[in-house]
Amino acid sequence: MASALDNAADPPREFVKHTRACFRCKLVKTFEQFVERGCDNCEFFQMNDDRDRVVECTTPSYSGVCSVIDPKASWAAKWLRLGKLVPGCYALEINDDVPESVAQEIEERMDAGR
Image (cartoon, rainbow, N blue to C red; front, side, top):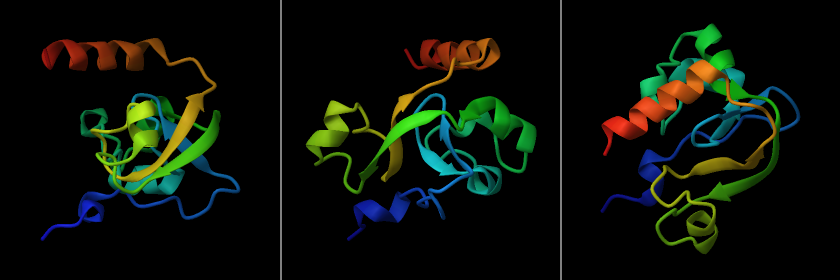
């Protein structure tokens, strides 16, 4: 039987510095983790092995963190609208403006999903 953690995002290796949050889903990882594997929820950003893309699609400016182990069963995940995302650590709030190009990409992706 598959565990909810089988598809989990790797937790940040450190929280002291160098962590960033994805502008779309708020997943928190270190800069290097985003470079190595991209965003586990937003693969369309294509951040793998692209340092400039990681800088463009993530921000170090966020507040709070919520660790979610089972998004479908967690009331906190539902309240934060993380229920359909992979288990992982998520920012509670992004304290930065989403770059226009990234906002447009997110909007296009949402329109394509309808």
